[in-house]
Image (cartoon, rainbow, N blue to C red; front, side, top):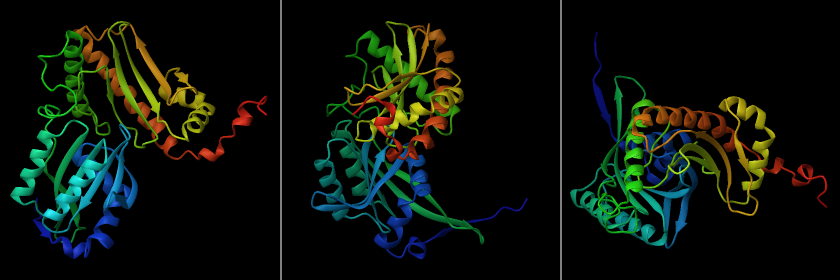
Length: 331
């Protein structure tokens, strides 16, 4: 079999300028998905050329697994001090944020600066540095490739900040169990799913995932007291929350058929979030011998939640909800 030869293509051959060519290309859904696959996040574009303090971020996104901000700053040349200063301004102005710096090439000092920032900041702020390349084989279409040169280290992150404890010496037995459970589940998801992206394991009773939209996200939960595991879709606090929940409720039968089980529907109008849950009782997270079975169930249902709710929620037109029709007695 005759093999082709990879040929590197200069970035300026495709993207003449950052603002008019590279940024609009990157902001497209399929290209953000490629970037997200590289750094392990599901990204949803919120704005292009968005003001953040005195600067203007190239692309502002939401991490759909937890509704936190992701700011993207890009260059079609090597990194410089000006962009580093802007990244620091963004980090100072936003409480919880992931900052992604993309460039043709990272200098050694800028790579070291991001590594240092990831060591000294807490879990609320994460920095990624990526180099972008273009390649083709013969006359084939040009293909982009992102290479990570700096990222948050999950084993050191949080030591200097207010994030989760990285080691286990200060953890209770329950917290140690939770951390070990999620570490094993992350490995299981990574090996067995091409669509679910696990977050960094933490000593808590939940782990967040994404269904491809910042309007809602699922998390899997452990309950050692009641010997139960569950999946809960959280519809985020926003003016749209009630409309999204009730429009989904109108399709309850179809949704539960797709999931293969009845669900618990909790509108909770007096609170800030609504939930749709699937529980699996008689599943003791304390029993390590049952972890493979539990985690297989979790992943199967997570993928069903993504397939059933993802596009449905993303495409919902909230103007189609009329509260007075749901409550005929309302004045």
